[in-house]
Length: 305
Ligand SMILES: Cc1cc2nc3c(=O)[nH]c(=O)nc-3n(C[C@H](O)[C@H](O)[C@H](O)COP(=O)(O)OP(=O)(O)OC[C@H]3O[C@@H](n4cnc5c(N)ncnc54)[C@H](O)[C@@H]3O)c2cc1C
Image (cartoon, rainbow, N blue to C red; front, side, top):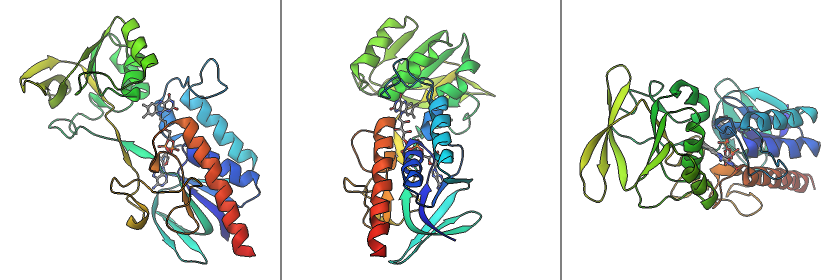
């Protein structure tokens, strides 16, 4: 069996690609290693996706997108892709369990959240250090938490956490937040959120669970202890490109594409957060996915001629 398109990753970009490809009657396989939805599953309320005036939860949007691909008979399997092989006539997608042959590949494997890489962080993952407020906020009801980061995701998550925690302290390395104005305004309205500027976490301390962190002021280089029950880290992203050939990556390991999602390998396309681009959002991921599917279709049709 040779597929027309194998899509790697079931976040919004991969689901949109699979939806467009299967709707165009291409024989489509989507391979997802965890659960369909990708980073959307870490988002409580998406209030910037066009058409959803009241917002929609990340989980609900993921369920809707997954239903759409199934309605058009795309195949979905749960497995992890560990490498791809490409020559002019056919391509192989190799997973932990099987190898799939295909005419084209769409890489939509997204990103991972970055760790702080400080002592104590790894030890307390799942016991006080979290990268997902939606998953873990209920454990911190009436407790004190820190949010590390100052971009959109960090501030969005701080606002979400403020509904559960007694006190939320945002630790940000710069002297002003990077998040868009509308999110900054929400912080001002939340009386239990405060921001500690020019600060980074140096160490996470505790016995069985976290009880404090060491904070360094990056201007004065002074250290001090800050008591906390949990830390939520949102300091950036790392592209999931370890399984891909270096030739399609830039120096930051993001995939380089043109505006129709072509990579440097003919018949291999990329979409969503994994690609080198300026705006990493659900709406741009979905847009990329649709373009990648149309490019894959054009590529397959050109091969036949
Ligand atoms: C906390 C947080 C809040 C956010 N809030 C918003 C928001 O409100 N609005 C907004 O527009 N955007 C938001 N974003 C950003 C948005 O979620 C991303 O831009 C979007 O999910 C990117 O989609 P994607 O499909 O490219 O990648 P992802 O969502 O990262 O999905 C990639 C998928 O690929 C899978 N995968 C990875 N490697 C492999 C492999 N080797 N084999 C098989 N599968 C693999 C992963 O398991 C994952 O499911 C938020 C992000 C975070 C972290």
